[in-house]
Image (tube, rainbow, N blue to C red; front, side):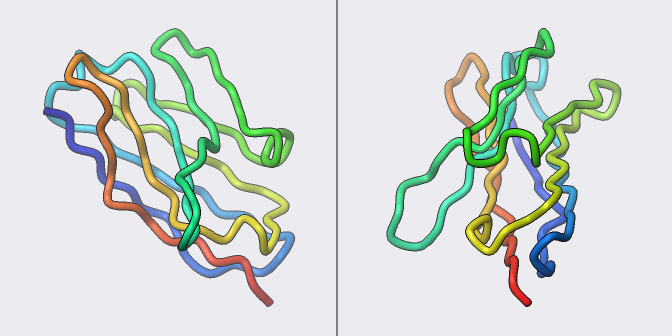
Length: 115
């Protein structure tokens, strides 16, 4: 099993920045990729960004150039730096990891972009 704990969400004004963190524990040696998804009520959960164990990244078109995903292997932590935030970025952000047991999810951290 892999446990994921997110932090860093909150309320920010349009144009502002936030950094989300996700700390992994448990069978971390089995993780091959980590990332972030987001979901708004009534809609599906969508990929925001992910990073493989080799460091390859990919982003949703809607966040490319504004968000940056990174990882700190020594701390088993992945980060999502979110800049130039827009109201449409408002959602619950979920940390995700892919391991031998399948997909693992954090409990989610809310991000609200509003003036």
